[in-house]
Amino acid sequence: MLAQHTIQTPSHTSGVGLHSGQRVALTLRPAAPHSGIVFHRTDLPQPVSIRARHDAVVDTRLASTLGAGAVRVHTVEHLLSACAGLGVDNLNVDLTAEELPILDGSAASFVYLLQSAGLQAQAAPRRFIQIEQPVHVAEGHGAQGKWARLEPYQGFALDFEIDFAHPAVHASGRQVSFDLGQGRYVRDIARARTFGFTRDVETMRANGLALGGGLDNAIVLDEVKVLNAEGLRYADEFAKHKVLDAIGDLYLAGLPVLGRYRAYRSGHGLNHRLLQALFAQPQAYRVVTFDHEQHAPQGFAALQPAW
Image 1 (tube, rainbow, N blue to C red):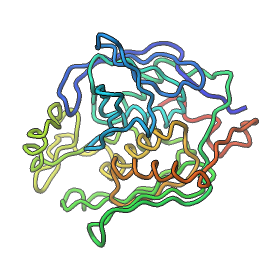
Image 2: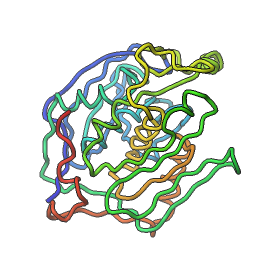
Image 3: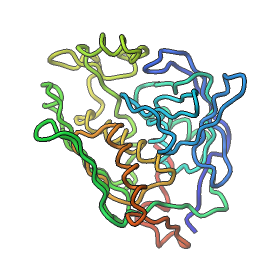
Image 4: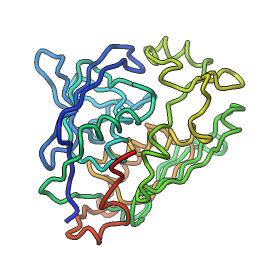
């Protein structure tokens, strides 16, 4: 059968939250089959656990935030993207603050932590949400419109187009197509960093956002150029980071998705609305397993084990 996976041993790191600026220690631990990805706020007098699911999302301003009562876990999408890219189904994530560390601004450091811990197959079939009918959400009209869509597909593929009024973004590739089953997540997507504009920094920080951001954990652009001395990691790094985010946001389905995601100018909010629309239409999906690995979509029996 195509089995679920967790990690073999705990893995640790620390850093600062991108938006909160708070120091945080993070520990990844193995989890039992069917647990999913579960975040544990261990800094609280009574620790609180929140499973990474669409119905736990409470905020999508510049990141995906989970909540249970008054407790929050911010900026979960990069770790979830790494889990999706490596095929990690079950994981305990211990945090000593309300936001995950941003590390280098991509998913690459989380990939390293997961691979360093080792992946472990479990005695339970891997379950997927297979898209049976198209689901579409949209916002705005004309040039300012944005949309996201899920369609039936034997695998997991993403087509994303961005549109930012900035010369450096326009000079880069604005459209990315990526198929997870081709096994190139670590090479082609994981290293794409989050990005921001100096013109927006003052407003964001006045609203309690981007307090931990800087040139070491984000691509920063002024009015005409990229300010990072090393430049871009990919020619189309801006669009690839949006794909990275979408992979993490869609993992909030609670199970890996089998389908094609298409989007234009989408973000965390619209990705969340897409999952809400999906689960509001039971006829649009079904949960499937694969008794034999050869029956699974190409590439899903062995998502890449190494760099």
